Image (cartoon, rainbow, N blue to C red):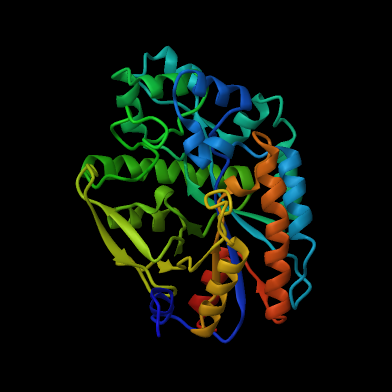
Length: 371
């Protein structure tokens, strides 16, 4: 009997190769600044313990990165290459001091490398990014300028929404209704509006984000993943102008209607098919998210999905967010997850010895070449 996973993997491009991609979102973005900030939220009644991203996620420290790289480098594919993370990165974070000085009327941002440099726990972290890139363990791609809808966030701050203001004072913005029911509008979706004025604003954000990516990393990103998997097709010409060729995401694109007041459309994005504007969908068809589902058999479920992807001639495109690899807020998070990642990678190679580890943009080029 065919399942939904089978049906998602049938349409589109096919290959006989066993290609494995690991796409990991949110790199570079602030989330929970520290364990002290986490405890302050709880003291104010904001239930950050109910949201795994608030519970565990943070800018990666050099220790986080070193531990992750050791696991990735512990395996080699059929060409002798280690496992590699496609690290989907935002290139900027809010400049909280300047925004406060404007009484929340104006938005200012800083490159994420400046955010790292200002934090005593992260001053040497970007050097580890560069080491991971040199060792072909860590390959950045574009996740946007910031993981934030600027207009909606500033409006929440100006309205004095209590949890949003508290988060601002603690140097973050990453709250949702899961932890703070007083938040009435979702502002983590950077592109979750289809209003013409917003689309024009997104053109500037995409251009600036892509240019900053090139400045920081020395190359242009050819793939892109929209925060929260939500974007209007109207931004795609702006992505193309910024050099984007490939769209990461799940099988379901969420398309905002108007200003995204709870109404969205959905479009199927099968691996290797094209968007209305000619961008190639890469489509995630496997998931390894142990921080989000700690009680699940994450390794077994991911292997099951990989088997289905390979059965239908698709790349195994694994979704695994940064939160799974961060131990600086709670070390138990990585104590659980990194051994599980090691098992997953070892089992992939045991079951499919001819596996090739590739990055998202490499997968896109393979699809485009029809090989």
